[in-house]
Image (cartoon, rainbow, N blue to C red; front, side):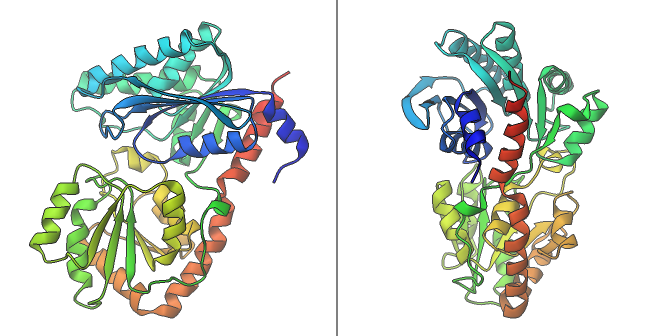
Length: 390
């Protein structure tokens, strides 16, 4: 996959990965990539995401030369929201400060964690801080003072990190307006290593669709049952599998029962990366019904579920209006539609009943996704970063 020069280079460096954690995402991809390349030390610290506390404790995993050497869980707060963020920030700082390791590179996946990295750099515990920004939510907090502090922390962390990665090109423009030069900016789109995804030229099931992700309002989970009621009018044997969980789980279960959809919607819960990457290609369609608000984090981020669907060859039906949903229309990878059950249902019906169209889009998606192989992107990016070390 890479030259021995690159492998020898990465083997001599240490990395600290910091993330507030909900489900499998960029943190895990980085961890697997660095360990596959036998990095000298990789420490991954996952903190409970206060809004979606699937974790109840801080999870710490340490690896040396690709082998796990230590795992431990540390108690932490995950509510109330603001207190939890403050407590975790302080707790993380001291966990690393009094740890027995120093790091060449810290990759922090939000502004509070990047701030911790900046403080640790001042204490000599690390050298290079990468702020891996997933986006910025213009209305993160209802309290104006807290929202202003959040915006200021994002700007401070971005300007005082050594390198700024961003999931979307929109965030690169925001960083430029904050005074950050292009030589410090890297576009790091949401994606997966294509080789890790099972990829079929035709779906195993021609009547099944899938929703992957957190089951919440932001991801449009609240309209899934209405979408299915519409699709059933034309495709009576249709089935929707929901991979993930969230705060709408119980509401969705209730709606499934009330609307008589027990045979047509199945909640599969959270699955590992390996599990869902082996399953997705079997489906005929992947849906991403994001709530159509442009002041949220989603509008300034990138869609992991969209790129995973494409890597598996699924035609995508997604809410229109987002910068990433424009790709679906532009490259004919599915359909970007208004955020309402009828619009989603119409395109689902089309893709389930027109086999030729479905297979054409599927093969186009398989080819397109190769341009976004995250391991190839990591190769280029880390080569440049590590070449700066003397």
